[in-house]
Image 1 (tube, rainbow, N blue to C red):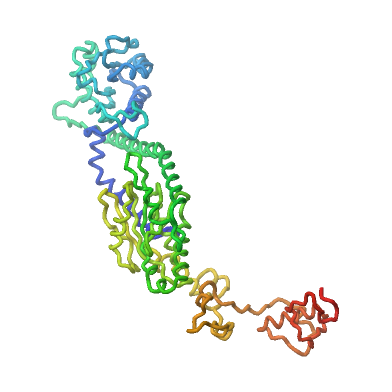
Image 2 (image 1 turned 45 degrees about the horizontal axis):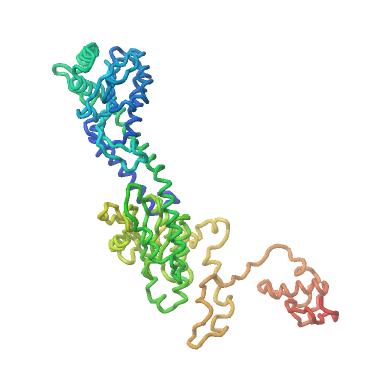
Amino acid sequence: MSGSEGPLAHAVRVAAEQAYVDGLSEGRREAWERASGATPEPASKRLLVHLSHSIERAVMSGPRIDPTVVIALFQKLPFFDREREVYARMAEAGIHVVVGFVDGEAHEAPPGVHLVSLQPGEPLADEWTVVAAGPEGGAFLVATDQHARDPKESGDEAGRLFHGRWGYARAAAGSELARLRFALGDRLDSGIRRTIDELLARSMPAGGDPAASSGTTGEAWATTSLNHMIDKLLSARAGTRELRAQLADAQRAAAARSAAVTDPASGLPTAEVLDRWTGPVGPETLAVGVAVLDLPALAGDRVRSDDRAAYFAAHQVAAALTQPLGPVDTAVRLSQREFALVLPGASERHLAGVCDRIGEQLQLASQGYPGVPLHGRVGLIVTCTRPLPVDDLRAALEHLPEDPTGHGPVDAGATPAGDRIVVAAIGTPGSATDATIRAAERGTGSAAVHGVPAARDREPSSGDRGPSAHARGTAPGGADPVAPPPHAHAPAPQQAPPVSRPRPYLDAGSGGPESVADDDPRAAAQQALRRLVHGDGGDTSSGTSVFTDLSGTRNGTGNRGW
């Protein structure tokens, strides 16, 4: 665990790394099936366009061995018109090119391109297909129109939904070429039919040779890598596509937060602000990081019997919760001891890191006035569920006791929507912050290294402290009605260490009969100022303190005051 990584962020990172490692072995069969093109997958038209271009570019840029055949089905003429120049150049390069779409006989094809006509009711009319095959290589894209729209895509045409397969295995491309050869039949030119038959005879396995329908190992590696990159690019594009809508959603949430009713003790919005997150769930629903904190001491005897302590403790919790939040994040007080965090668009790792920093702040706040131990439990989730699953998080907190000291993060299972909940201790001793404090108290911190004594070594003895609260006057019953308990806000004033530098006004040989003790800084200051005012002799017979306000009166020299 790195020095700046808290326990929750560490647990989330380790889980993500383990999931990736597990996926390398568990996903092997799935990756191999995808590489072989055996399993159709949903795909938008936008993705099919990019895959088609990748196959076309591969055919045109790589070495070509005759015969090389490319068959492409475009459904409609306008779709082919956009690629007309590409296929014309393929034909010029000596590639055997066949294109097909509905009502093809009514249109002219580029020179060297063979055109086949498809009937509106036949299965091939619903296909988006590009198959390229040669003696030593092959690639294929075969997709069937589902006559539906992907709601995540912005345009009607770009959002058309298909089920398709693709890959770069030569054997699989040969199988698709054979399928199209028999499906198109006599609509293919006789010369093209002979070329395809010769190519299949050369490339298809014969006799007892392995079928190798999924391709060679190198082809499977290449296709698996391509699928991985496609998945990543689609995920990144989905993020950019949804960003504008999600930012607007988060800004509306921030506006609702500013208009919400606030808790008078902590200054945080009340649970009503969560009503903002009750809208319907859609394909662009913003993922929200949610954390529920339970701090039992806020409902304990210490705060129930002291309104002032309750006020200070609530403000300390509010400060700890809001300090690491971003401009659209919200901290909410749900009840006397329960709080919630809402982080729009947060990842699991970011949410865990925020909770780690909050835990450090709560632990530090527990050490001062009003002495309320601000530790407890926290439940975390990243979800698209609406309304936010606050009740599920509350129930998940029962996986840890109210005093969770010594317990690590716990997987509390999944919500009905499938989002996993993690429960952990927060603000408890034993964190990196607490270890640093203990090291400083032992004198092993940086202060000790540079010769500064530890905090307890600087603590004055009882005899060095000023008058106690009882000496200053207390209310009946012995309690000071105004001042906080001892050490509530700051330690008692410390005695300055003896100075070692020269003191010209105190150490000069003209000192009077009264010597000034080094441990009486006020008397030393009195004598030094008298020397400045009266000269080196000093008028020590005067009983006037140099700290007395002499403005408007006659001073000790008999002159008018300054």
